[in-house]
Length: 352
Ligand SMILES: O=C(O)C(=O)C[C@@H](O)[C@H](O)[C@H](O)COP(=O)(O)O
Image (cartoon, rainbow, N blue to C red):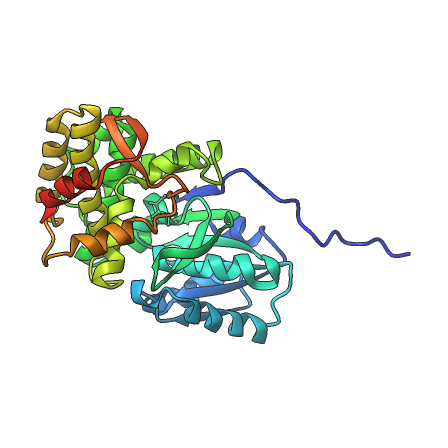
């Protein structure tokens, strides 16, 4: 009898390995015998070099953006994987920002019941948060990321070269998640973030340690609680209201980071009311948002009834109602249940 190759890889429950810098070729090539690159179409100019660095057999790109983060786009990826005869030992290399790694990661999680994948993250938002931790999925008209899976990438590539050419709004959307991370972590991350200028290609060197700290914070939380049964919920600070706003305004109208920034202000206001958070924390977060030109108020009115209904589609909701992530002080997030409608209404009015 010829010796049989093991077909099914050992399932890893620990978080993905982060690779900082531009020297990722050999690690990515070592992940599996065959690699296929799938990317956001906006990255067309990078594709020859990425395909070469990944030692991939081929690449495919599709137009992506929050509005295209749908099951239809996932089907387009399935179609290409089928044409390429992707097999159980094929590795999908997903290249792009948060939408790309969420969507392509979801295609990898579900094609042939799960292919290994690598996330090559090309945006600030992706590098500090979205590409890490294996939450993959797509939006539906009922809610944000409502269809998805937990499927950890084998590697997450955080190469600063991709960031240099980001447009201003992409830097800003990343800041929404950085503010969230600084509030959850407290300590030196909170102190450092507050002193930094607007991120850009020129100030990237100053931001690099913060990007690394946010990425490492995320890995450590995900390692403690990979399937979000407890402390991983803290990473959702600002997302209950943020996701509801994204869905209500239409995906892509507010960026994810803008929505999370607004949602964080609401969460901080609730935290003052319910946990005695020092109001100086919200004032400080607002100052950062002012400096980085993130919206602190909604540009159009929102119907509170519709928002209240949308909030209840949050993935942290359980039979007993919503679970909110609030803050007692920077570095001390708390989960709070059963907040009254009137209290939420008052907190939401601070961003109207
Ligand atoms: O990884 C997590 O866990 C997070 O909650 C991080 C969030 O910043 C991220 O936007 C996440 O994708 C949202 O997850 P969801 O479960 O609320 O859709």
